[in-house]
Image 1 (cartoon, rainbow, N blue to C red):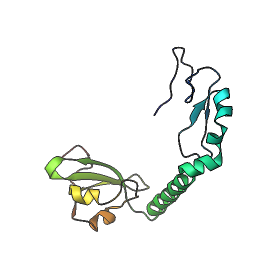
Image 2: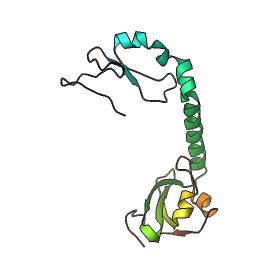
Image 3: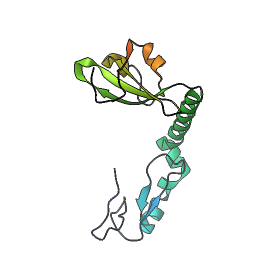
Image 4: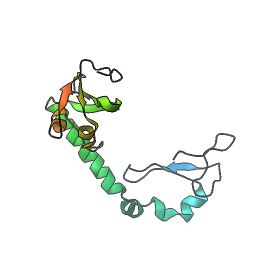
Length: 148
């Protein structure tokens, strides 16, 4: 959800809706979106800005997972492998998936929808990972919109 602004373009408090002197307050784990709060609501809801509240909300664990995933991506790219970058379904023709390496080289593969759906979108994925779940075929072009 985005932020609310009044007719003068001033940020509105997420708690009471008041505008003026409202500031965005960051998550202590830099995970969830910042909360807009006026001075009164910041005092009234002080517990919502503390580490313990955000930890209970899952921010610390979410941030940890994000850091681990980014480290996994870096390791894969450092090995010279290609990582999933984009995909587009083409109905019965299957899914065309683009992969890119650290040098910016791109390759494209075709696969079934079932093969593509076998791996979570948040998992750093290589062509070899998909090949474990079904057949993959090199595409003629790296144009994502171009069908077979």
